[in-house]
Length: 366
Image (cartoon, rainbow, N blue to C red; front, side):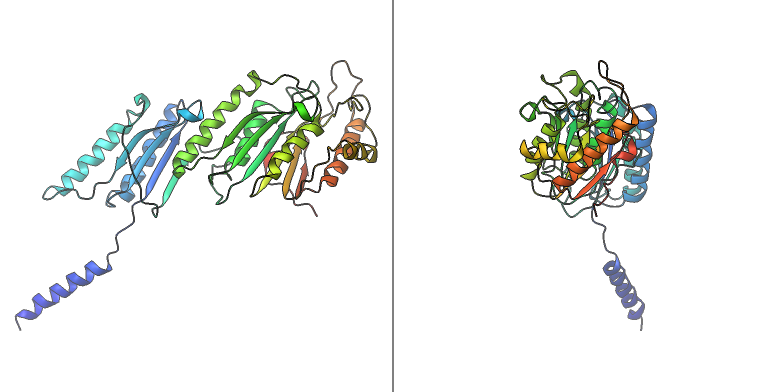
């Protein structure tokens, strides 16, 4: 009879061991801007505190801070902590508390850190959580990284006299990029920025990004560092910029057509086509006449499988051209609406201003 309590204790201990399922190690990442503000650094410290509370008893759990660069090659890991496999008996509690104290002290020195030499391997089956600071993109939306297949986007940027400073701007380009980036986390995704030229032959790719095959957090840091390079686009515009909007659209669609996966075309232009035949700032042709000309000139590409959105239509007058009014603006929209319909896009959306609303999901064409 005396053996019974011992047997019960052994069985109960065995049962507790079997029911306790260890958590898989996970990775929590915070992504800071290239030049973080004090509030950004405090936000990272808060994320670290939450991680310590939830993961300090999970061996192998990783906390990482990445800082963006002014270029995609300059993104770096600046801080790494990994929960050890054991806290070491007989002072496990003291060792754990010391680890927590060192981590909290080190995070306060983050602003002075230039990088980290730590190499951390996280199991592929573990969960990865990435939080970008600041948390909102240029459209005012929370950064949310989705997409499990390559996604491709082309943006047509019109810097002609009628559109300059009002349509394709640093702000609208950021919105265009952000609309793509949040859905382009899958490696192999592509973004191309086309500058409108004087013809289809002079339409130029001024900026391009391909999502690399890297760990998730490093992909995010790469994309957002590449985003910082957009600032220099207007400082290095290609020669022969113009108003051959149809030519740039044709070139962009030809490039998109060869890619596999979801595809979108964003046209940041007032659509005031200017060629040897037309000058929309002065006179807008009838829609059927314009579509017929595009067809003859082979400027009516097949947009099957491509979502198309346009923003930038306005009533402002161009220096040296006749006054532009709402009536002529409506004629421009009618001509291009029929032209886009003849291209058979998967979806079509036409907006006025290139504000945040213009860079939401396109409307499905019925």
